[in-house]
Length: 324
Image (cartoon, rainbow, N blue to C red; front, top):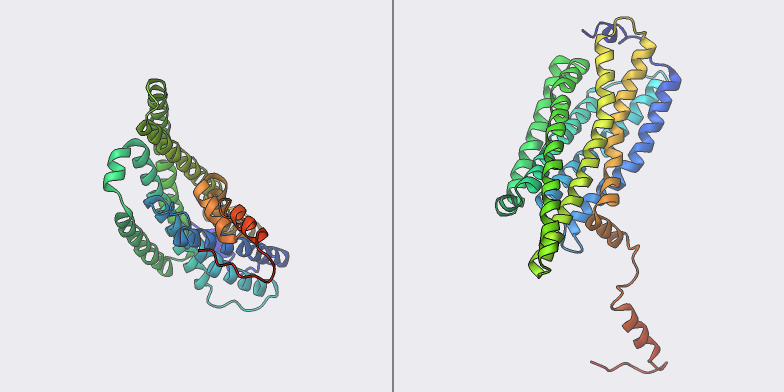
């Protein structure tokens, strides 16, 4: 295993490839940091008081893992690949590998937690609302980060390629299986809920029934956004896993091909961290409204703006408004 990759350790990467990888890492960092920081800020500030839930707790945990990519992994990648392009000595390469594996492990485990959260919320909505709160989510998130910071230390003993190979065969493959199983469960539960809501709509229009429809519609929107997030994860990680297989098992691949695969599988994973926040803005109205409020894209509140305009128009220059 990894015969070709190991034999290429002393072979320098093509200069153009190193500069391209460094440039793309810089570009991804510019996208990754602001987007994921805005996700964390939106939940922390929560201007409309609608983002405090177990789901958003795991979303923030995922955004933090993506921030590690943007603030640590990608800048180190820029530095190392530029040095590689200029044929300079590269030291402390373990820094980029450790931050890379920590963030990857956290992303996989957070997505697994999000999968369990959505499956429970859709399949067992009453039990979910009654038993699963932010405290339990905090405990699970703490356990996720403990494992994410502990497991990558195995890499220091076995090396990059072997650890990546094992990681691809366990965590990524397990996530893919969970995705398939829960997707079938999502479809069945959502179809049952749609049928139930149609019956409720036809029977009566009470406030309780309208509230049930709003809650179910919100859960469906959140679940659809999560499915897009998980789909993006698989689109980025699946090619990366295939490339890891090729790097470890291909006995006829040239060192030039190995270097290309090494950088491509790395960039695919970085790309998922950069694109995740855009899924929240696209699919989740509460996140989108919070983003707009925080960035001050929105003008004065529609209810107070007309009053302020009329009040200003009614004042006479040089006088003091003494109204209560």
